[in-house]
Each structure stands twice: as structure tokens, then as C-alpha cells.
Length: 611
View 1 (cartoon, rainbow, N blue to C red):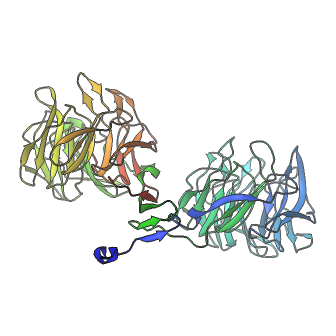
View 2 (view 1 turned 180 degrees about the vertical axis):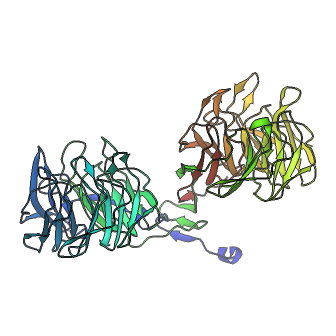
View 3 (view 1 turned 30 degrees about the horizontal axis):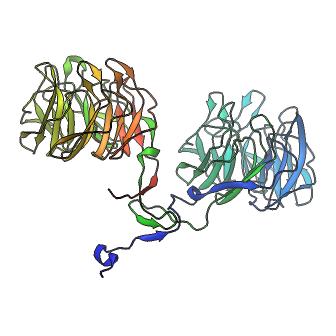
């Protein structure tokens, strides 16, 4: 009998667990030994380990400041010699046998610094700026203190401790209190989150020993979270988003933050220590009760890294799986807008290289703009201005089609070659607001509205030189949206007689149309994106004629629709049929010139089933 590997040229791995994006993505929280004294706003030896660190100072309940000092051995806390000055909202650094405590609040902000030598605390040189609620990172001889506040004043100040004294350095880019911090020493530190007069922050800044640089933001704004690790690999857990504590945990990989396993208990103002592979948070407050709990973070030393496109067999769940990017885990973010605000234009391409054309700017011109992933540039206009012009959704910035449209209703087809538009063969049926999909040489035009004042079901295919009529759709409609290619496309929603918004969906297999599972939210004039008729998004649109703008996004996996992340702004007149990948989509216009981009946040493991 022939072997599978001889036939296919490769073997399918057998794994006992699913693959994960990173070591941190495979991490989880578990209960650890509780503090002897429950308290919040605790300082800690942050460079300690999960099995050897200490927590000191804090705020007791009800209303008492403490100088308590406890060490952790991986199982339980033991009380050691107290600090000289009781305080809370102090900051800390170092390890269990060599720690530093600085700043904090007594009855006002203080600059006091104390050093721990393994048996007692000694007063050493003060901070230059008295404050509390600072970010912190480093060792007992190389520490960075940043941000914080005193009374109503918030600070961006940064100070470096060299084992003897504090030195003022370059400020953070913005003032903030209760930021998280991570770093092995004062020369390489990450600051993230916090709070300033404008609200809670997602900002992340990286320090290189001299200056701060803004890098990619947190996914969720917060302050007072537990944090540990180094500037290329850190964990942030819990915190406050306002009046409520949080469980969300995020992992930093040196470039981006990713949400990973949540804390068991929503919590803020904890003590913290450890690395992105093994750390802990202790104490804190939830929701108004001071707690003594400890949660320990552990990420596997050995794990199976995700690689896009990999196939494997999970022997525990007895399933075959494929690692792919998952649109259901995507999010929307703001992006650059058109130079001239307009609606009802057509568009095609990918998120980093797209083209948009037509729309009702003055006199229904043929304005065309290209997008490079950050901004739009005006290029040569269409020869015939129009609105609701249908695009070949899988066109590019060097090869796409615009066909049909309105004002008046047209059959004109134009081809874009990267620099200018050229008139080519007209549609057989003049129409607007139908489905446009496919490429510049293999396109489909279906449904729409025509001069006779009727919604249409007609379908035509383009072969690079002319249009041919093929089988009609089932339900006459227009101003819906769709995605796909000439042999596999979807048309969704739209306006049907007598003037109603429809949730109906039809699938094209290259020969005929079939009615399939309906949208969860009926809509018209929505945006859409998709690689084929088995993988796409529909987003925004209007839930009734002339009104009811929607932010809802739905993902189609070939058999069902799933509601996923909403757009930031409800948009009812999105430029039609962009045809981009559902992993990276662009919604242009309506209202205003601003746009939004949808991006999948990473790889996921998809179970392969027979059909």
C-alpha cells in the first residue's frame, strides 16, 4: 500500500495540543499563595521570580497606610522586616534579596527611597520629584521611575537610579499616572497604559536609555494593571477601565500587544513580579474590597508554534486542523479618507493598494483615487462620470473594471490600466447598484436597477473583451452588496419590491444562482469583501430604505453568517463591493471622508470537516 507521504510529498504532524501563536498565547493563570495582609496599591520587587519575590507597602481596609513587607517562596508569603516609611501607591524594583521602594503617598506625595539588603530597609537618596502612582522597571542598582502624579498634577518625568542617586532624564511623550512598566534594567524599558486628564490610555512607549518612542498601542485602555517582563516580552493583567476592574490580559512580543488568557478575578492595583513565561500578581482591589489573592501566570516552555497553512492531527480531540487567519477575531480601526468626500462610488483592490472611482461629487464626475494603505491620491478620472458604478471586486490598482452606473443609467464599461481609463464593450443591460465581482478580465455583473424602472435578476459575464448573458438570479433587487470571483460569488441583502430591505442571500457557482442562508441583519448599501463565495464579510449599510445606519459586521464561512466586531461608526452609504480579503478590508465614506480598516488579529486553528 502506498504511503500518504509518498503520494502527497509531506506528512501530517500528530500533536497532543493545538498550535499557538506564541509562548504567551499558550499561557494561563492559576491560584497561588495569598498575602498574609490583604492590601492594594502595592509596590514589589518586579524583577523577582514567580518562586522568589516580595511585596511591600500598600493601603489596608478600612483606610490605613502600611509599611508591611512580605516575601514569597513560590508557595506562601512570609512577613519580613517592615519599611521605615508607611505609604501606598509607591513603586518598586529589584529582586527578593535586593529590592528598592521609592515614592508613594502618606498624607501627600513623597520622594523617599529605601533599599532592601535581604534583612532590613535603609533610607537612601530621594527622588528628585515627589510623586506616587509611577511606572517602574529594573533592578536595585539600575531602575527607571516614570510618570505618576502628586495632587492634581500628573507627570511625564523620568528618573534613573544608578544604585546611589536619582538622575533626571528625558520625559515620556505624555503625562500619565498608574502606567504599567516592564524592563530588565533602566536602559531598556516599556511603559504602557495609565491615565491622564483625557482619560484612560492605550499608549505604549519604549525607552532606549535616552529617550522614549511611541510604539503600538494596547488593545484595551486601562490604568493600575499588574505588569511584568522585559521591554521585548511583557505581560499586562487586570487594571481599571474606569469604575470597573478588569480580567483582560495582554502579551507584548516586541512589536504588538495580543489578548491572551484572562485573570480568574477582575482586579487592579496589585503587586507584580516575574517574566512573560512565569509571573504573578498579588493583592489589589475587587470591586471595592481589598484582597490578598495571588494569581500565577505560566506559559509553556515547550509549545507548537502556529504557521499559516500548516495541517496537523490533534490526537486529544481526534480532529484534523489547519492553521489559518481568522476573520472572526478581527477588529476595525480608523484609516485615511478620500480627498473628496463622496458616496456610491465603486472600489476594488486590497487594503494596502486599492482604487475608488465615481460618486456624486459635483456634476456626477468620474473622480478616481488610489489608496496605499495610509492615504488616498487623486489620479485620472473616469471618461464617463457615474454613481453606483459596479467594480470587478478583485481588480487591482493597475487593472480593474467599472461597469454600469447611474445619472443617467448606463451600460458603459471602462478598463483601468494603472494610469488611465479606456472605454471597452458595454453591458448588454444598462443598470446600476448590482453585484460586481471578479477580475479585470473575468468579471460578473448581476442584479441591479435599469431604465425601465425595475429591479433586475439578469446576470452577465465578461471575458476581457465582451459581455455574455447567462442564467438569471432568483430575486430581483439592487443596492445590495457582494463578493467573490466569476465562478464563485455571493450577493447579499439589497432593496426588493415593493421597497423593502432584504436579508436574502444568493450564491453563484459559475453557472447558476441558489438561495442560501440569510444575513442576520437585513441591509442595503453595505460594504463587502471576500476572496470567493465561501469566505467574505458584509459590514455597515442601512437597515431600512433611507435610514437606520448600521455598524454590524457579519462573516460568511461558506455555510453560515456570524456577527463579529462592529465598525466604530455606523455607516449607511458605504462605497460598494470593495472585494478585498475578509482578513483585511476597507470601508470608505458615509458619513464623512473618514474610512475604517478591518484586520484579522492573528492565526487560528480551524477544524477540517468532511462535506
